[in-house]
Image 1 (tube, protein in one colour):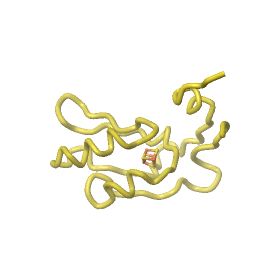
Image 2 (tube, protein in one colour):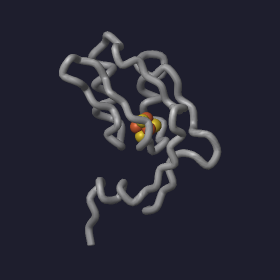
Image 3 (cartoon, protein in one colour):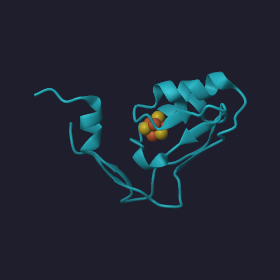
Image 4 (cartoon, protein in one colour):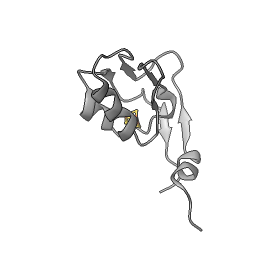
Length: 94
Ligand code: SF4
């Protein structure tokens, strides 16, 4: 049976550290190219461009891959850390 990416991601479990994000961003960063990099590259689809050009981000579904850190730490991404011990993603497939 073939599973879609969404189905595979859906079987993971996430232990969210509410109120203590492990990644913080500047949603109003002025360079649109930097923001679009994140929208296109995040495998979890967690970066969304709003109609007014600001960026929305939800750290709760983070796969901890580090892509946004490599691409935009120091520009849009202001802080990138792994979640605290026992928090974050628990992979269930593959
Ligand atoms: S670490 Fe990976 S999954 Fe998490 S927000 Fe960054 S690009 Fe998305």
